Amino acid sequence: GAGVSQSPSNKVTEKGKDVELRCDPISGHTALYWYRQRLGQGLEFLIYFQGNSAPDKSGLPSDRFSAERTGESVSTLTIQRTQQEDSAVYLCASSLATEGVNEKLFFGSGTQLSVL
Amino acid sequence: GDSVTQMEGPVTLSEEAFLTINCTYTATGYPSLFWYVQYPGEGLQLLLKATKADDKGSNKGFEATYRKETTSFHLEKGSVQVSDSAVYFCALSDTPDMRFGAGTRLTVKP
Image (cartoon, rainbow over all chains, first blue to last red; front, side):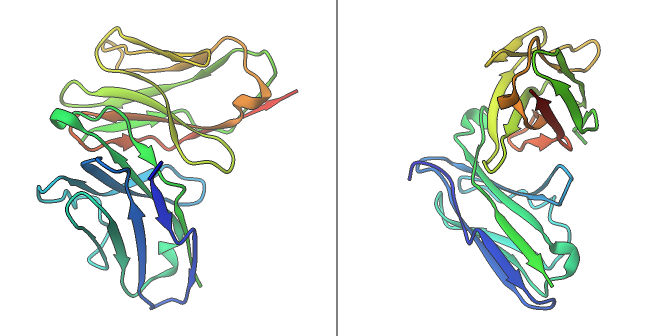
């Protein structure tokens, strides 16, 4: 596609429910990132995928969070047993990331998650 | 680990005023440095970048110089416009992942 696509754009859920967020990166981009942006705060790194390498999960805040990516295509971020503190905008980005150096990230519009 | 610290906002300026948003970084290696901008209702997009010491990134009248001696990458613009109102994020990338600052909200009033 023309850009990074995320769905849904908004998600309201009840505390304790599981949610799944989807990201379609730009075709051909080998690197894919998930960030979390709480209201009024900066971007918090969650997880990074690069090609077929093992993902960098160092930013995931708890074992309730997990993410998968099939090859160099779609990624899903799953949050189990959601808590109110999980409410935030979840941003996905992709890049070419040639030679292990990041040149430019392209961001999606994000998913606004609200946990009631 | 690598990190970025940028000045807290919000920043409110009158049109044609001079803008500086401070950004300093901590890194063990030699990172590339970036400024991203998020206009109201839009996603983040790259504004400018610099990949090595003394490089100057520039775009849309904005400039930032990679200063290794002061570990800084301050964003400047000589004359801001109302359309520059946005949130600005400083970021660094030393490894393939990228780390962002907290963001600085700029409001420019006519």
